[in-house]
Length: 384
Ligand code: NAD
Ligand code: ZN
Ligand code: ZN
Image (cartoon, rainbow, N blue to C red; front, side, top):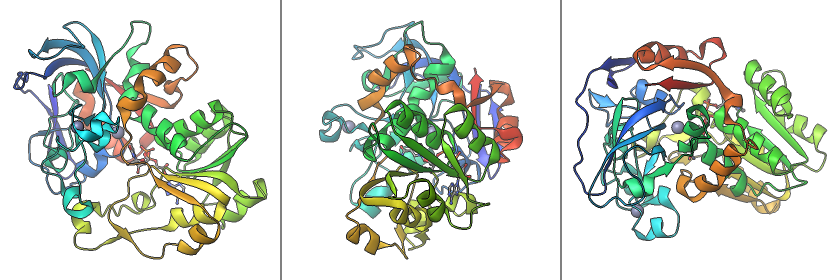
């Protein structure tokens, strides 16, 4: 069984043949767990132009190695593994520097290359926009460059804790590294989705003095406050988020993390391809962060922006001496071994954001519920 895309809000669970090894570095995995990500909704809504009917979706998955190609060295049949959401070659200049998400070779169809000058790594289950690789919302997946893109999981770590090492655990951690979150600092995070909440948790573990989370979804803010111990700001109730931050931190916050990207609430994903037609992204959250961060503070943008923006508060960046950093797609492989240890020891429990469990044949209903954010749906675990 696989989850395939057929059109706007039209996905179906359909039978498909088990994929075969086509390259010597391929690994075929039997999937044991997968999930839906906020970014899958851009596919669901047909906002990506390179989608083709029958595309298998899903970039967050884990499983058991079923078959390995002749050049695979690090994993063998029967190993429990989690896959990184990007597909990196492991041997190009960027991969060798540990910047696997910046891999130069796996996404030859890259639209980004046209716009930004260089391609980025391919992604599982993200259509021909990201290399045309079949995804992990399936019973079996072909994983190219298995030695680079699979991490072995010890038996002591259950599937529900290991799965999120594919994307949101390293991504949220990387955001705190880029924002220079450290012991004693204060942090403001825009967006209480999986990325924002786990970044809040990492900030707390790093010893941040105060973590402020901004959102409008009550259940998400409650999780930030009650489970993670953050201060929260509901932007529907505060007319001025920046003032509310200064009320808590009179000097401004040391670190800002944008884990929201305003366009998502408005449903206005412009997408890189539309960017070529010069549509613009909103700088609203970035500007709030530029105003709320203290002099010589740091801001990291982990939310997905594409293209250009107008009305960017460049004056604050310059006059306040702020360091504004894009995170890129997080280089999962750079962090995942260390972060697995923190999950294994129980120091970091990603299941604080796990809200629902599904079975593979319920995928269509899951997409519908996830799209409507029904019943406080946050992060799901889908058993295959
Ligand atoms: P999500 O949609 O579940 O959460 C975003 C949250 O932001 C929502 O709760 C929404 O209510 C809130 N929000 C909207 N407008 C806001 C505003 N003006 N101020 C404060 N909050 C606001 O998304 P997610 O899965 O947590 O992902 C967050 C972002 O990170 C997305 O843009 C996603 O595409 C991106 N992402 C980046 C990477 C990477 O490697 N860089 C990886 C995964 C996800
Ligand atoms: Zn994801
Ligand atoms: Zn590479």
